Length: 435
Image (cartoon, rainbow, N blue to C red; front, top):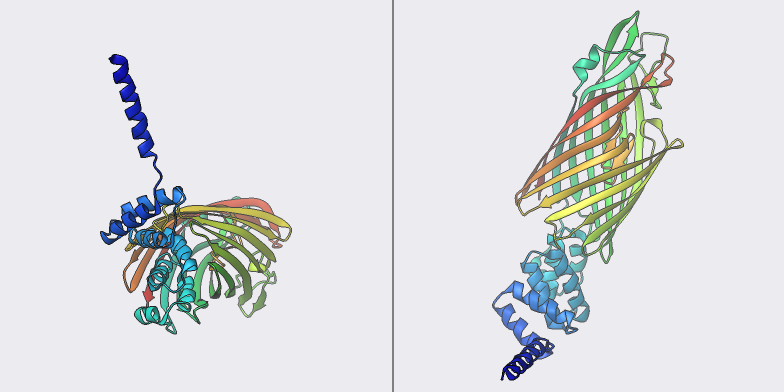
């Protein structure tokens, strides 16, 4: 009797296990996911859809339901992936067209949404009513820096001549113009007043000469959408500046080192530039960018090239780790700069933390919209920015800390191997109006 009971239990277990392994059918998946779709139970739609696809059952309406479910769950990148698959099967489905358009926009692929808009039906276009204004965004930014060791440096020097900053402020006004559904143009004008010190030892005593400068920058970036989430940027940053000639009353033409400049009256003027381009591929869960640029910052001919990657592990833009490696060659001297950070983004708030290591001297970042052209090199930078987001206005604040290093110079303006260090703090602010 005992053996019979054991045999019955074994047969029941085998039958139950076999029943659980019965493969899904097209009819069962279709009816179940449709019922869940009508109930708007998006999590179960995705759960059933993934299980079905894993077992080799995949069809058009399953893609549509899963794409909409991903959209409703806020996973825009996954929504794009599966809605694009559905669109390839049926380009006339207006539901797919509308959801795919908004998935592009909400994931930050604005130009991609503009391109897709040209392909969708008139019914969907009339519903969306895309309008490209002459100016879509106006932004105003402020960067204020201070030398944390300034007071100490004024009274301490055990070497030759050196130049160091007290502070500077960068005021910027930028405009964004969507030229067409394929081309976007952004440009910005910046002015930067600078306060600096020339310090040298005269008869054993420290002599500080305070001098001012002013720099104007014009930055322009044109972005071309190439299709299939490929983008090409070409950018230019022109820099015009002048600073007081602290030796204008003497016979010695002692200019700050490294400047390819010409003296005019009591001021020394200079003109620098950065020109470059970048190519970006926005894949579903990763975005890759390669960039190259040439420049003559501070009179040094320079080449820079690099690679930047952003990851989207949550299938949306909520959490985005990023990193970059940049190779810089300047007058036969090579340098590598590493950048890493993470961005957390919600509907109303975003925060980004980042760090740079390497010699940031005559260095450009973010398609040359950010330029490190102080005479001193930043050996490292760590900072964070926060953005408060509303429908029409974004407010940005931030802070960064930089360890700086520069060389002493001799009376004949030759650069000495001896160096000095100081720390610099940067306060960042900005307002963005979305028109």
